[in-house]
Length: 120
Figure (cartoon, rainbow, N blue to C red):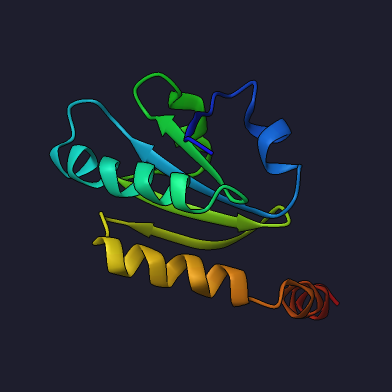
């Protein structure tokens, strides 16, 4: 699956589907964003079961503000609607593949149980 552009109106629909969603907050003028773009695109083609969404921070300022994006690129990953990763900076392809493997291996039920225990 290729990457998809995420907007404020499509965000909830995209992340509510469950599974793994990886978001790339970027801007056209950002050099590191341009360098990371091909890595993100290649991973999207390699892992069609994962949603790879791109959020243009210039066009989607409300989303960027909501998630307090202070530098770009910022990568955010959700699993079953829960944010499990949030980091600024581009990644090398091998690092990005390690992140994807960690997301696949993450026991989201344990994460949910830990969150529930913190809320008590």
